[in-house]
Amino acid sequence: MGRLDGKKAFITGGAQGLGRCFAEMFAAEGASVAITDVQGDAVQNTAEEINQKHPGKAFAFTHDVTSKEEWETSLAGAADAMGGISVLVNNAGIGGALANIETETWEMYRKVMDIDLDAIFVGTQLAMPYLKDNQPGSIINISSIAGVRADGNFLSYNVAKAGVRMISKSIALHCARAGYQITCNSIHPVFTRTAIIEPMTLMTGSQEDGEAKLARQIPMKRIGEPSDIGYMAIYLASDESKFITGGEFMADGGMTAR
Ligand SMILES: NC(=O)c1ccc[n+]([C@@H]2O[C@H](COP(=O)([O-])OP(=O)(O)OC[C@H]3O[C@@H](n4cnc5c(N)ncnc54)[C@H](O)[C@@H]3O)[C@@H](O)[C@H]2O)c1
Image (cartoon, rainbow, N blue to C red; front, side):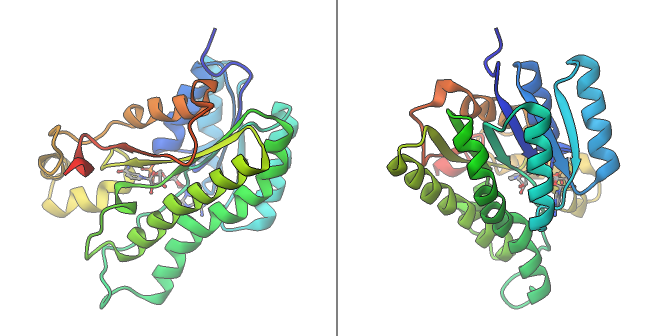
């Protein structure tokens, strides 16, 4: 028995990094996974690799989360392929530029909002009918410690990820009041070994030095591995967390405890 047997998960930004790890770990626990990403070839490869280990479990869709039309077609395609959608993981995201209130451009600010925050509104609204038809359901939004701790140089990312924290709580309360068995929670990772932290790690010269510098800021003295976040996502996708909603889950080696 897998912890996610019978679950049908729609995971955005799943070609690489955390989304790919969620898809692999969910499939290993028995879920079907619809993996979507703006990188069409890469997401196709990811699904094929998962299917080599877990035949018939993974389906790939080329999907830009800023496009309402692409949400509509990939949700319909995923529901068709999996026989419904019971878990939505809003994971796709970009880091944007390292910029402050004096240096950030309006164009970059809008881009980060579009991908990291507004897409969650658009996509979750469109996914609700599928989730309602496949209860119990779970919505998992990937925020960041940047959603609860500010930095002068992370202006747009801070604002977007703080919005992800609050949209998750609002969705959770709506679902609870409406009597839906659909939970909604946010996960807040600290620096975790994926492509998104490369602009930060490479600032110091080598990736190794950069990761060591980031690790020194974290009480547990290491950066996260994708599976550290994946285990949290499995829990929130499973029926084990059916009473857990509106929560914000730090996966951060103690970073936000002080
Ligand atoms: N790795 C970290 O340190 C860290 C920490 C906190 C939060 N996060 C969050 O985790 C999530 C996953 O990031 P990651 O670390 O795996 O980075 P990543 O860059 O490896 O993966 C992000 C994925 O999102 C996809 N994507 C980007 N724009 C898209 C769009 N418009 N439509 C569809 N897909 C799009 C990319 O193609 C990529 O596959 C992001 O929301 C990120 O903000 C990451």
